[in-house]
Image 1 (cartoon, rainbow, N blue to C red):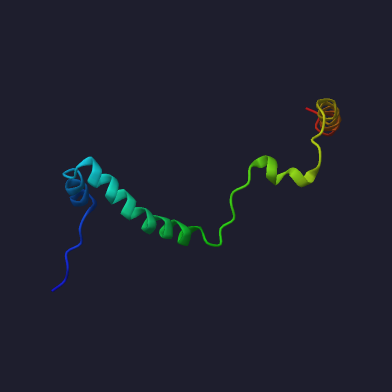
Image 2 (cartoon, one colour; image 1 turned 45 degrees about the vertical axis):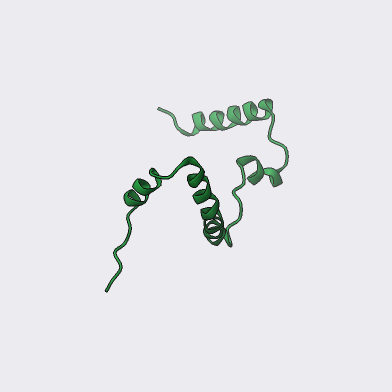
Length: 84
């Protein structure tokens, strides 16, 4: 005979009937299973890096003056190429 699958709602209904101490015991007993499941998911995955970490090998960022100068050069060339 096939065993019926227990739903989350059924489990929550039963857990709500436990005393606070029994709820703590339940959590303590579930933690090792949860830890194993999370470790299995994270195997082979590198931790995410921030945008600063991704660009760290590019050296220092350009200064505001350098950015302004580049913008002037680009737009100056753009104006000469596209006459309206």
